[in-house]
Image (cartoon, rainbow, N blue to C red; front, side):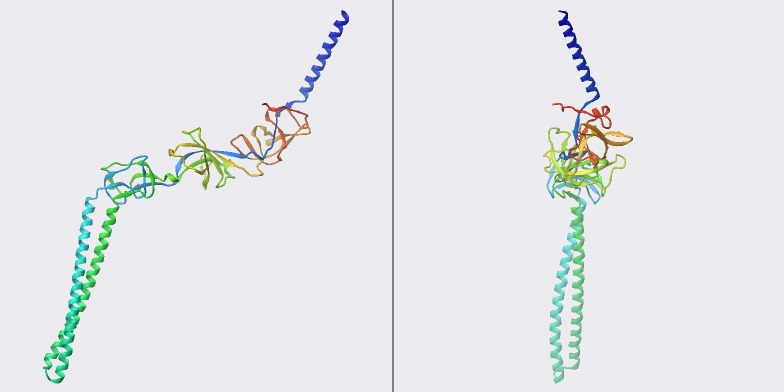
Length: 384
């Protein structure tokens, strides 16, 4: 019996010794998570912005008058050329009628002057014939010299009458041109009493109501081209350096969180926000949403992908003496490597400009305080 107890005690003591040794070994060789530097994950840059129209017009009159009617309202869609608003035209209509009457009178004067010119030409032709006949007769002695001289004088008067008639015709023609131009001016002013849609548009705002005394340049309506709707994203300058027109963008409207709208960068602003240090990046929809609200908040993810884009999770980065680096793993031991960092992406990864090659294993930050230069480690299995 005593021999059995002794054997059991020896087994227990051996087990405790083995367990302690294992625990000591585990304490000396930490088990840490590692991640790999990768080039197969496209970087995504976050931007926050609003739905905006690229083409926005504030329409008003260029003449003074009383607003008679505004025939559209917020949210209306109007075709090109549709009448949107009108001024009271009674006074201008009277001016136009007066100018048209002056034009008609000038046209009648032209016709009269033309008839007088034709009459003068006919009279001239008759007196030329008379003068030729009298000059022949005076040579034969059939008529007196005085009679021939009178015929020649009548001819000279007829020539002068033709010149006067031609001058009157030219004056009448000039008066008709002037009257016609004045009528065109009054017609143009009449047309300026109406605002028409310059393009197929969405009415964004109605600013005044009938009865308002309008002055030139005062806005009546705000229009937007619904085919020009895009998103103005604000992107942190620190991540905007590598952006380019044409890069794909995924956008989510705040009112439609379950939907993603595809698009591409259409324009990159050349001027940054001096206060917020943001760049404006304008992104066009591949397909403009059927229903949208101008000014609605939008979240965008711009995809940046190229063959040399090496990234690691941000939590793997540690700093020593103010320099960024990582604990790399080689042959089961850790070594600290300094790296040059680039852009920070929306998924928590960071671009590595220099210091790592694809496939390099690095220690996750959770294990960084348990490793040191040349320390042997155990690689923990990734959680499932």
